[in-house]
Length: 139
Image 1 (tube, one colour):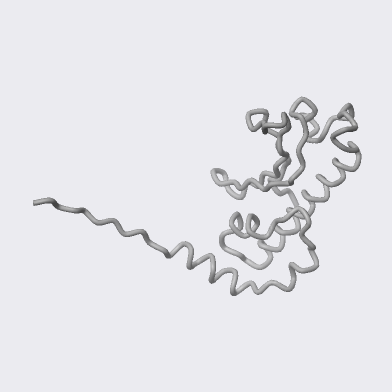
Image 2 (tube, rainbow, N blue to C red):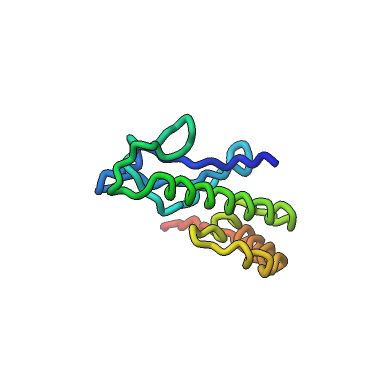
C-alpha cells in the first residue's frame, strides 16, 4: 500500500547549534499534511535529498549513521502503521489522529487498545467548537 509518508530535513529550519530536525511528513490529502517530529537532528549538509536518508559521511560526533538511518526507518514504519490503523478503523480526521498518536518511542502494540469511538467523538468536538464574534457599536 502506498502511503504519502516521507522524511524531510529543511535547510531553512536550522537550530542554534547548526543542526536541523528531521521530520516525517504525512500528506493525507492533496492540500493537507501533517509534520511529525522524529527528534533526530543532523547538520543539513549531511541530508541526502535523493535517497531521503542521512549521508554516510556524517561525522561520528553526531552519532552512528547506520543506527540513525535505521531509527528513521523504524519511525516511518511506525507512522505507516498508525495511518493504516486510522484507515481500517475509519477515523475521520486522520491527520490530527496521527499527530496526536505519534511519538518517536511509541509502542505499536498499544495501538489496538485505543477506543476508536472515543477518538472520533473527541475529533468531532474539536470540529464543532465555533468561535463567536460580536460587533461592538459605539454611540
